Length: 212
Image (cartoon, rainbow, N blue to C red; front, side):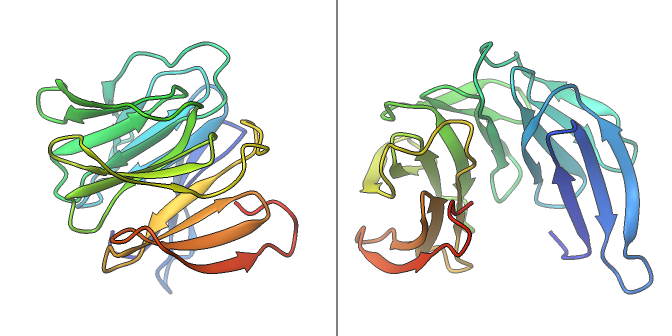
């Protein structure tokens, strides 16, 4: 959140925190979570880290100590995707652990408050917009969907790529700082979408085949 640290997670199951300051630029700590990791995310103040992976629980850790604070039920066996994101104010988190639905939880009570349904294949990535009032999901059905983060109402659905992208291939999305645009990666192109009117604003071909 403060652009001084970078978190990475990979197929080796290791989560690493990197110090990016000029004095640092080194690995701060590493810890292992069993299995292939598919998503890592800081909360709003950088003190907590959410981790999602294949066929395993979604966990939230304390950054300073590496202690696991929260564990959610494991995703379904055989699923190859998983994504998790904190809301902007840190009060909620959303997770899509390999299924066709995304769930939103209250961080304090761990109560599930919303379930977002509408995708016909696994959800590969999700994110809150900077204002925290909207949530975007990108599925292997090729659809980019936006949702009202408070009510769970589907706002828009856009065809980001064809359904030929396989579940084991990474896909991703991210909001612009003003929250109006969303970039999607999947298939041979990166695409920039206006989530207010649903228009495709820009296409950028990948130079190496699959855009991730």
